[in-house]
Amino acid sequence: MLYCQYLSGMGHLIRSAEIARALARRSEVHFVNGGPPIAGFRLPDGVHRVSLPPVWLEDGRLRADGGREIERVKQTRRRCLFAAFDRVQPDCVITEFFPFGRALLSFELSPWMAHIRRRRPSSLIASSVRETIGTDNLVEQAPGIASRLNRYFDMVLYHSDPRLQAFETSFPLPERVRCPVHHTGLVAAAAQSSRNGSLDLAEPFVLATVGGGRLGYELLECMIAVARCLEKEQPHTFYLFSGPFMPSERYERLRAQAGDLERVHVERFTPDIGQYMARAALSVSLAGYNTTMSLLRARAPALVVPMGHNAIDHEQLQRATRLHELGLATMVVPEELAPERMIALVCGHLKRPRERAIDLDLDGAERTAAIVLAAIEARAAGARAIGAGAMGIGRPSPDALAGLRPPSADRGRKGEVACSGS
Image (cartoon, rainbow, N blue to C red):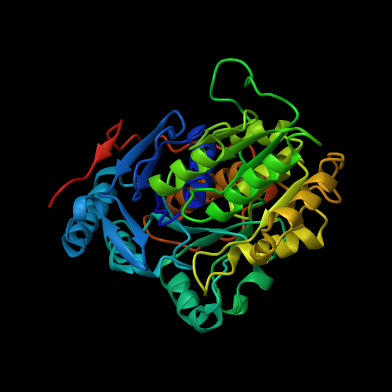
């Protein structure tokens, strides 16, 4: 069972879906989704959805559909989580980003962890976390995070290549974490088209994306100005994606600004972003995790603009800085988003070949699945040997990661389960 909550963007959802895809090839997967629906997005085949009443972050506060009272929504979500676990009885529960983040969701996650430990102590609990934890007050939060890891969790699935970022450099108190920490590699989706055949794209083209769209309007506005200036001297098609969460008035304003430019296409969302990246002459984007993974997979020449969600979130700045240091992308700070500056950068990068100073490990989804299934098998083997009861799980050996058998139990009801309530 994999719990995922995206509060402002799509990064956590996309990464979790890739992990679910890898797990579903060898086991039954129930995907607990706590965010709002996204048009055009589908979970991988064979993954069973459990839909909580959606919440998201707006002006620093949790919001719910239809202006529903948030405290009543919280109560419903807690009941749904408890009921979903009791119904499925999973061998492993994976929490996306908790306890490293998601403090606003402690109202449901902390009681849920305690419930899991009481009801089925043999269930493994794993924390899935990106390579850059990214909060400015992490030093102050670290003791509490380590305490929750040691109390509830059997392992940390750290989705990074140590050459990009090691856990020891991302988390301030690694020595206090008693459970195993696995560097899984980076979780990057394969560049597969969701449609029949290849995409019909006008090449050469520049791709500009801003993830979910709650941030990044200024970048897309700047790129329309760049396209206008280059229309005669160095004509390229421009594909701009606003993301599903950009406010409608901003999205329509972008479309109006590009209305007289035949080569500029402004759209909301595509499930085929990897295909666009693979064929783009240049990618210009924010520096979110999944956008970065697509860039690395496609080996696309890239400009990345780090924009955090608020003053204490430096995730994108840390990631963009590291990419720049490794020669994997060029960082552009938001203060440089002026058409004159961007024209020079775009023109310079359009001439660059698709080459990489370093090839990072992008097979994190498959390795995550192997680690989780090996740990489940190890715990089951231990229970068979010593009788029922919990036991500690260490790092699986290389031999244990090959030829794994999926758990045979089919405890959950198949299909989608939606939780509701007032």
